[in-house]
Length: 475
Image (cartoon, rainbow, N blue to C red; front, side, top):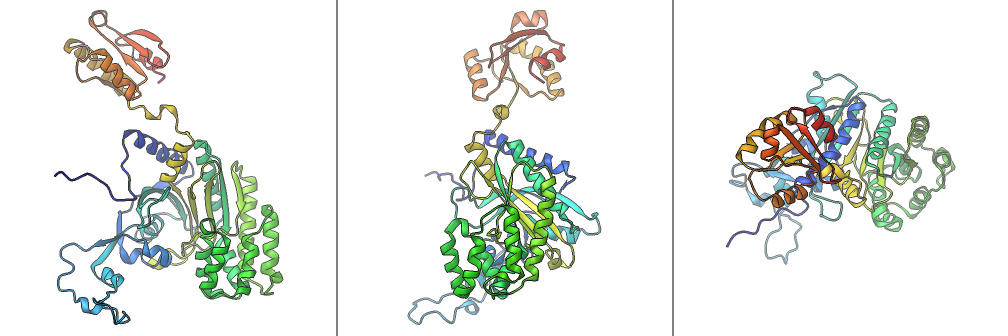
């Protein structure tokens, strides 16, 4: 019995029409990146696990796809050393520390994002690049997540980062890039901005500075599970009810951006219930004020707001953090990023601050599809189909087709001399807008007939009038 073909859950095939749409996304985003001086790079799909582990927090480490070492990695492995000693006595079989076994037989993993490999790249090639270094990267990443709508195990990211500069002009330009990209796509978005120093300040004024990671991880789930569940998680992590009460007003903060900044400045200055002053929190507010000053004169058309509940659950962020939501389509964030100060330090190059943004191409695809925002012409595989009327006619068409292709005009000759209805149906299925039918008469008179299948307009040209043919095709 033949095996039924399938693909792993959380992955997708893309046919020609989907690839046309995806390439439209990639080309649009990369064209904007280039206008801001970003240059392309690529890194391997797999990295050493030592490069990836510990960079995304405990939650992120669980989602890493590990690659089994080649050969026979389990040969000679003493499994007794991995037996859990705290397993219940009633267990009929020994319980093993699966994580420890995995670490023993896996040295590599599929990349979780493009930022950590980028930091590794910068350190490894630091003598070959000029700083500040602007790069963009469009490649797939993998996460062992539970597949659901808008969440995949394999998906593409479109990243732009600048490293080697502390200036918040870089943050402004990333906001401008987001603004321009979604303007080109015709998508209304909300750009949310916070600062990780503000979250650190929260942990300080609530009296639990050592719980900043736990607080951040909990807050990052607020859109998914709601404020009550977030508060319950913080209590489970060891925060007191009084500490949660200090944090709660910040998560529910209303008003315009200036009002939010003013209130937070007051809270971090000692006006919170705890009376604690947080210099780190005040520094975060100062950075937000500077960034929003740039944004005010930066010509941003999309909505931009300060969201003090925005956490972005990646441990390496240290300053501004961004998240972008589509306003007219229900889906998770479609873009996000932030500033990191110490990521290259992990690989031996300290003091190299960077900031970056990542576009989620797969979610953007879903939004464009759901809102019917892809251009009508995007599905065209060819601009012009030459009908096949026989061997003599095909020999007449071959040099004409070559001349058009040399001009960059996509066209094809139908491969067999089939019935015209079949050839017209082929053009319709492939969304080819023009057709040419050249029979004995056209060959004898050295002309080319063209028909616009959308409007019905027809016109005849000399076989060497490539300029006229191109103009009729709209090229």
